[in-house]
Amino acid sequence: MQVVSISSLKGGVGKTSVTLGLASAALAAGIPTLVVDLDPHADATTGLGVRPSRQTDIGRLLKNARKADLAANVAPSGWVATAAANGQHSVGRRILDVAVGSAFTGIYDRPDLGRRDLRRLSTVLSRVEGYSLVLIDCPPSLNGLTRMAWTASNRVLLVAEPSLFSVAGTERTMRAIELFRDEYAPNLTTAGVVANRVRSGSNEHTFRLAEMKSMFGELLLAPTIAEQANWQQIQGAAHAIHHWPGESARQAAGLFDELLKNLTDSGRMRNRVLRRTPS
Ligand SMILES: Nc1ncnc2c1ncn2[C@@H]1O[C@H](COP(=O)(O)OP(=O)(O)OP(=O)(O)O)[C@@H](O)[C@H]1O
Ligand SMILES: [Mg+2]
Image (cartoon, rainbow, N blue to C red; front, side):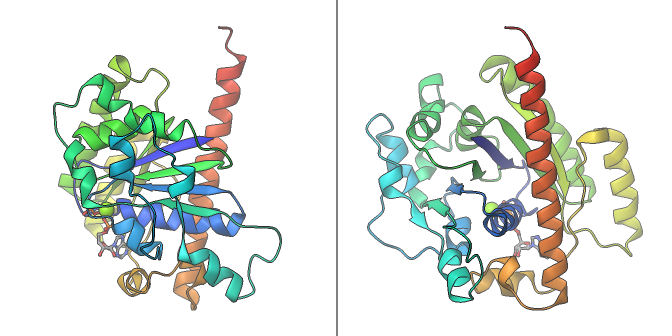
């Protein structure tokens, strides 16, 4: 099971949008996936079309981590039913579940979370089976929730806009990951940086992308994600990008297919390298 945190120090750069895009690509590819919505604003839960039901939210599960039954409390994304209703995904059962977000997780978003609290999500996740991929949508800070997500992850995917403050924030986050890995999570790796909201005609964006390439080298992932005119409309309708009609949505869906492939391929490569290393 690959567990990927989607993080950034800066708010509003597209963490939730990238999480949703990757979840949509995973659903289309038939990869059994769980999205953990750690952000107290619970935007990913909304975007994934989850109907409020009897599930216990992830904040309360974390509070009772040792007894929590995550498998009994995940909610299916509404996208799965939409796909079935559209006659898509007719081959086999598709799994896209959500560990439901809520404001309750806010109790852990403190800078002083101890080692025991940092392990809460790992403990909760250790009892679920049947997913190949877990995507964790993090809040925009390096406080307790993001650090709890990193403790439970193999990989961190950073999201950045091609702007000065976002690039500077990404560099600080990279350094924070290195410090965190040394102290708490020796197996954590940086999956890379995805540039979001890229406008191809913008000189500033071209300049910042070149800057990111020289700063992050191979860790700047391909492809970059373009600014999408109807993005808010698609998210507002709680639709998967793969289910939205029209050429621009089809192109954006293709970008997320490619990003997911690069993410999972490089993860496998890393695992192969790790397995070859004598212990
Ligand atoms: N590629 C894109 N094209 C157009 N709009 C985008 C794109 N990516 C994100 N947005 C829009 O930008 C806004 C912020 O995106 P999003 O909520 O994904 O960011 P975030 O990093 O999760 O924010 P927060 O830090 O508040 O959790 C949203 O309204 C979203 O629809
Ligand atoms: Mg978000």
